Amino acid sequence: MIPDWINAFAAQHPVGAVSTTASSPVKNRPFTAWSALDDVKTKADGIAHEASREFDVASQKAQEKTGKIEPGSLKYYAACTFGGMLACGLTHTAVTPLDLIKCRRQVDPRLYKSNIQAFRTIRAAEGIRGVFTGWSPTFFGYSAQGAFKYGGYEYFKVFYSDLVGQENASRFKTAIYLTASASAEFIADVALCPFESVKVRGQTTIPPELTGTFSGISNVVAKEGVAGLYKGLYPLWGRQVPYTMMKFASFETIVEMIYHNLPGQKSDYNKGAQTAVAFTGGYLAGILCAAVSHPADVMVSKLNANRQAGEAFGAAMSRIYGDIGFRGLWNGLPVRIVMIGTLTGLQWMIYDSFKIFMGLPTTGGSSEDKKKKN
Image (cartoon, rainbow, N blue to C red; front, side):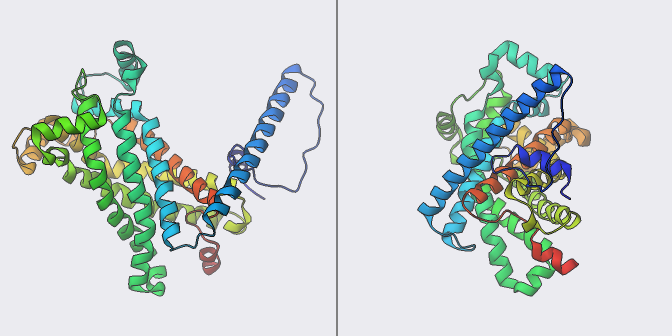
C-alpha cells in the first residue's frame, strides 16, 4: 500500500498521481458544501490530468530532439547543469523577500523587532518593489551557481567513483557525496561571489547603495577593483561548501532511507511520487544545511556591508566577531531555516522534475541499494 502523504503530494504534481488499483465507492453527499467540494476536486483533478498530459507531450518532444541521454555523457552533464540553473535561480529569486529581511537583521539586529514587522515596514516604506530588493543579482548569481553546483556534482561524483573504483565507491558512498559536492561548490562560488556582493550591498543599505546588477558590478570595480567583488569569497566558501556538502550527502542518505522504509522498490513508484520524495528529502536536508552554514552566512553579510577599505580578512573577521559575539552569529536563524528548508525542497523537486522531463532517473535511492540491504 502506498502511503497517503506521497499519494496526496504526487497527485498535485504535473507528472501525475500514484496509480492505485482500488476504486473509490461513489457516495451521495447530503450537504451542498460537500457537493461543491466534490466539484472543486473534480475540476482540480481535470486540470492536473491535463497538465500531466501536456507535460508528457512536451517531454516526448524534448527527448526526441535531444536523443537518448546516457548517464556520464556530455549530454547528461549539460542536462544536469541546465536543471541546476533552473532549480537554484528560480527558487532563490522567489524567496528574495525572506533573504532581504534576513540580511538586514544580520547586519543590524535592532532594525526590526520581528520578521513580520520587518515585512510590513519595508512594504510600507518601499512598496512591493522594495520587498524584492536584490532579486536581479540573486537570479543571475544563483542561476550561475546552480549550474556549476548540480552539473559539477554529477561530474565529480562519477570522477571520484572511477578514481577509487566502483567497489570502494559503493562502500564509501557518503565520502564520495561529500567530496563531489565540496568540489562542485568550490567552483560554483567563484561564479556566485560578484553577484552576492552586489546583492548584499543593495539589500543592507537604505536606500540601496547599488540598484542594478551589472551597473552595480561596474560601480564596485570602478571604486575597489575586481578584488572588491571577491572580498566576501572566503566566508562565502565557509558558508556554501559545508552547506552544499550537507545538502547533497544528507539528501542522498534521507532519500535512500525513505525508499528503504517504503514498500516495494523505487521503480514501483511513478515519477510524481518520486518527486514528492525528492521534496521531502530536500526539505529535511535544508534544515540541516541552515544550521551548519548560518554563522558563515552572518559573516558574509557583515563583511560585504562593513568591511573597511584595505582591511585584512582576518582583521575584519576579528573586529566583526568582537562586535557581535558568539550569539550574534545566530541572528536570523529561524527565518533562514524556513527559507533554506523550502528552498532545498523545491530545488530538488525542480531538479528531479527536469531530469524526468529529459527522460533521466531521479536522484538517489536506487532499487539496487535496497536489494543489497535486504
